[in-house]
Amino acid sequence: PFWGLDAGIVEQANGRRSYAVRPVTPQNLTEQQKIADAFFAEKLLPRRIDALDVALFKPEA
Image 1: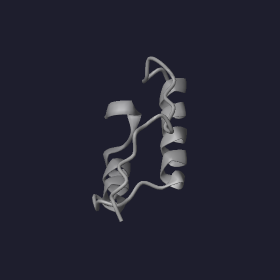
Image 2 (image 1 turned 60 degrees about the vertical axis):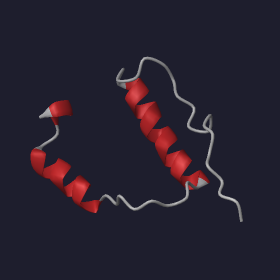
Image 3 (image 1 turned 120 degrees about the horizontal axis):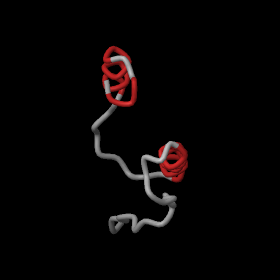
């Protein structure tokens, strides 16, 4: 298994995942930053990523 994860764990995580389209919140970006930091620490990313350094879509009211 990739990253040494048991297939059952991956299936369980994917079963809890939602693919619904929703607005991005600051909490979402905080969670993404934690993941990016962990990937960088494990050398899965070549450089640090800033999750707040993105252009967010803001629909007109």
